[in-house]
Image 1 (cartoon, rainbow, N blue to C red):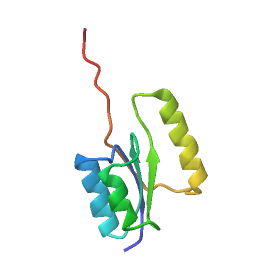
Image 2 (cartoon, rainbow, N blue to C red; image 1 turned 90 degrees about the horizontal axis):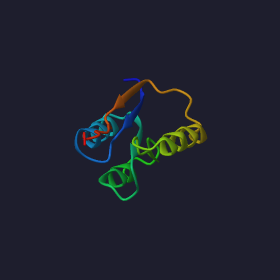
Image 3 (cartoon, rainbow, N blue to C red; image 1 turned 135 degrees about the vertical axis):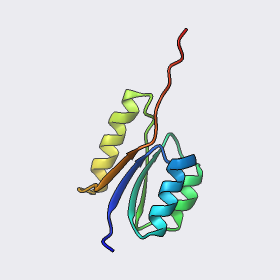
Length: 94
């Protein structure tokens, strides 16, 4: 099996976290985002430091998204084979 690089946006818990867990178990490389440090995602990533990259991104804040792009560029990773956009925001009507 060829190792693929996956980007999982919104990976700190739930479906996103399970995506990361399954992909790392299958030997893939994963770039995962969380709004902040200290999530279960950090624990999973410690088991595969050569294949897991954790970056900060809060999709509700434009500055955070721009910072994420800068962080991603600094990793040196040039190819992302798949992207799962699992984060979102919901604005409640007033």
